Length: 187
Image (tube, rainbow, N blue to C red):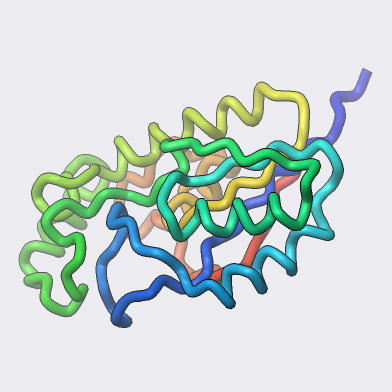
């Protein structure tokens, strides 16, 4: 018997309330309310009945997940810390432009294992965290929507290709999914 097709939907949060160019991976910033509602209205009617709705616990994602659930009372939000953005350590809350080039280069020279921002999360630890959630979805039975962050979207893109860790900075997927945008993978 052929296994049922399952879809993993990934939606990025709306733009955050912060200065442009700020490093805010694990920093819990809110998103703009109007953009959050517009993103929820854009995806809610597309979602199949019975989909599992998981969200990063950070406010910018949790607010969007709550807005989707308000539009779709058949859905219940489940917060999952594995879907949170990468922790950039000492760089959190600082403009990317203020981070010394030598510090950034040192991180990317050992991209998989060096902690970002001296005491933040390594790419390997981040990928393992996201992979735990992804593996759980793969073993599950149905569709899921993850309301999450750009880093998680990139990590899942690699996981879908069978890559468990980006060993070099050049291996990290380029491009940016728009704030409030979504993509999906089928299995």
